Amino acid sequence: MERQFHGKIIIELPFKLLTGTHIGNSNDGFAIGGIDKVVIRDAVTRLPIVPGSSLKGKLRSIVEALEGMEKGQPLEQGKWYNRGHSNMYRHEADTRAEALKNAVDRTFGTTGRGSADTNHPARLAVSDAQVTRETADVLADLEGDFPFTEIKSENFLDRITSAANPRSLERVPAGSVFVSRVTYTVEDLSHVKDDLKFLLAALKWLEDDYIGGNGSRGYGRVKFGRAEKLPLDTIDSLPIRVTVKPRRAYLEDTEPQAQEFDTVQALREALSGTLLQPLGR
Image 1 (cartoon, rainbow, N blue to C red):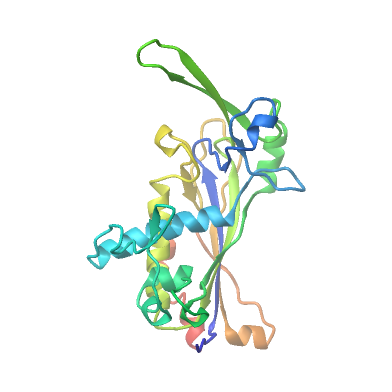
Image 2 (cartoon, helix red, strand yellow; image 1 turned 45 degrees about the horizontal axis):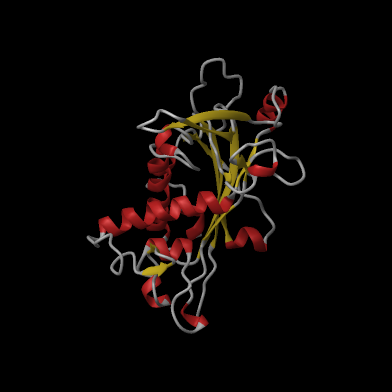
């Protein structure tokens, strides 16, 4: 298997929570004051995080659907969603040759079938999203039993008896700003625009969807880049910063200047301009 290396595209990806957000483990809370679901935290700082695996998995699922529809593939088990495990299906190319035909396989990787040389390693890496210092300072002033978060109480009502079944979930409050780092390794110059087209489309889609759990009840709405402040919001959002770092920058130990974009849409528009020119030099 031959792999080329033309450089990396590094995206510092900030996002503001527009609604309270829960990303966590439903089994963790029973031993902690009766909270049914707690959020995932950094083991050292105890600040909430959004795991890179959660963000990358969400983006992959969106790109799978977008590209499958774009190519006229039936989004069904055994067809576009061809790989199943424990009754959970997703798309995954069976060979490296097949993977190179699809943006989702090229970008997010595939394990293939059979021998190890059918694998296609992911070109995309997504880091855990950490809160900004300003967000941490605001969250530190919150009053409650759990540091840096809020507790949301809900009730499930029996439709016959009206008996209530209360539950409590830990959430990261709306207005919080996180920053993740998304790195795309450029292995084939002819694939870059197509791969990024689907990735940025997925980010736009995600702004109209949600991350984490309970999205149908309004949790987990986000805005990438700069966002309008919510009522009584004191936390500033940040621009998306993109660094296009060609191979020679690593050999010559130079650091290209990052470009800033207020929105995902502005970044999409830049793809048709000069943004990627450094890769071809």
